[in-house]
Structure formats: structure tokens, C-alpha cells
Length: 243
Image (cartoon, rainbow, N blue to C red; front, top):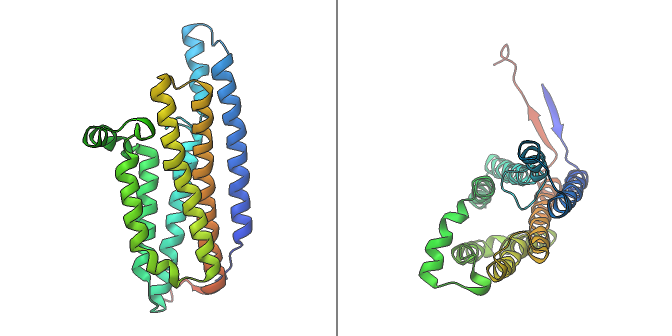
């Protein structure tokens, strides 16, 4: 069996953007209910609270968190597919794409298992972190981000100008959310010691939106790179009889 693979980057990114908008609307409803609704007796109240928390973007065990992990894994698969195509065509930069795929898998695992929180207390102790560095895990993660950026600078400059701009945009948006807004949220939390105050919830919501938008831009960038530079490709699947 033989066929051609064609991809519409705009359609994929558009669908993902609609999902993020829906999740954000559900999150806003969740925030409103948490701040204004009395859940009543212990049994029913706990049940409804858990249902509401399912759509809270600030919760690690929620539908938005599942979406984020899935989106990152999807992005990882795209990078892996690009690496496979380049390796099949004996092109350069294969290992850079494998590296991108690996980092995206790690980010997906971190999203679902909160790996970064393991570094929070050690970093806080080591750097005596306070204020905007109260969530001290951003220090080692920020350093790692800088190192990866330096390693990938040559690779970035070798890409088409269009892809360069989109990759830089994706990284800027994501890091602004994951590290920038997280640092602001940390300062607010340790001043108020309350994760339900409105400024903290707003900052955390903006953080989650920026992270999700950053991933969508990255996915669009990779699919666009695929469509313009590597596709369409012929797909040949051998049946057992002809193998």
C-alpha cells in the first residue's frame, strides 16, 4: 500500500487553540466557583469540589494538565518524525531533532509528575532564594534553559528564517509563562501565604495560558517546517504477503 502524507499546520494549530480557549473558559468557571460557591455538606461538597478542580489550570491533576502533557508528547513525536525523515534522507542536524524530542518528553513528564518541585527546596537552601526566586526551582531550570539555548544556537541559525522566528517566539512565550510568571506568582504567594487570593490565581492562569500558547507555536513551527521542507513524502506499507 502506498500514499502521500500531507499536513495542514494551520488547521492543527487552530484546533489546539480552540481547545485551549475552551479549557480557559472552564478554568474561569472553576475559579469563580471555588471563590464564591459554598459546597455544602462534607460528602457532596467534596465531590463537587473535586469536579470543579478537574478544570483548574493551577492543579496538577486536572484536564488542562492532561492536555498540556499530551500536547508536549505530540510535539515530541513531530520532532522525532522530522529526525527520522532527515536520517532517512541522510541529511544533517538529525541529533538536534532527537534532542528536541527528548526535551519535549521530559517536559511532558515534568508536567504530569511535577519533577521540578523536587529541586525547589534544595535550590532555595543553596541560593537562599526569596522574593521573585521564592519558587527556587526556576534557578536550576533557568540555568538549564540557558545552556540548551547556547547549545542550540548554531542549529537555530541554520534553519530557514521563517522557522527561526517561530521557534524564538515559541520559546519566548513559553519561558515567559513557565519561569517569568512563576517567579511573580512565587513572590505573591510568599507575601500572602494564600493560593486562593485573586492576584496569585490571575498570575497562575496567565502562566498556564502562555505555556500552552508556546507549545502551540512550537508545534505549528515544526509542522510548517515539515510541510515546506520535507513533505509530501511517499509512505509505503508492505503487506505480509509481499514481505
